[in-house]
Image (cartoon, rainbow, N blue to C red; front, side, top):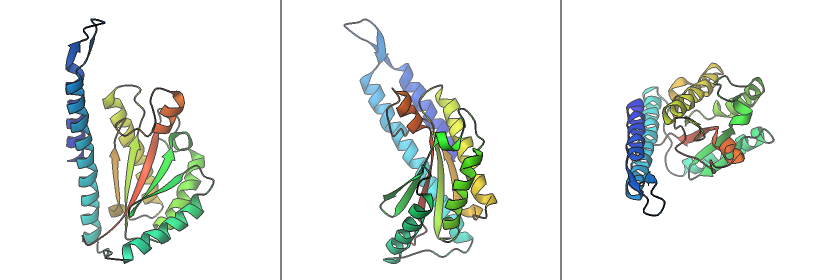
Length: 220
């Protein structure tokens, strides 16, 4: 289902690319603003739908594996403790920890995780993953979404595939370190969630990343 949703997203972007209009001043063809706006909105909706579906499946798998859910005020305290330990373990590694509600996002920049256009994790990053796993294995009621991201260089389809394979590499690295497989979901988001401009080399470098979103298993 995830792959189907992402293929539909690529189709939407191709459709938008084909919707052009003639600029009345330059006489050049350009993408219609109406079509682009509609396509961007549809693409964003597809991405959100894929992420939500992935996390829901992970929660169901965790419950099916007998992992107990958190409830009420226990959630905030549980994530507070996890955040504190992750910040301590990852200080100075280049991986940032961001709190988003009850979720934690670990941003793993491409320059410390993968060589350009490669999916093999760099040897020096293996030690960082060791530190991440020390915490993850203490907090078994946490689901883990591993999302790969790229810059906008190259075709959308190529970047979707590259981002998915990079996410799978990180997901595999977590499982071989003892993280329960049912807790992990991998997803490739290609160039569709940039955190910086793709107009500069520095911005593109920031967009080439893997993010781990840690979310509590809840009863709601």
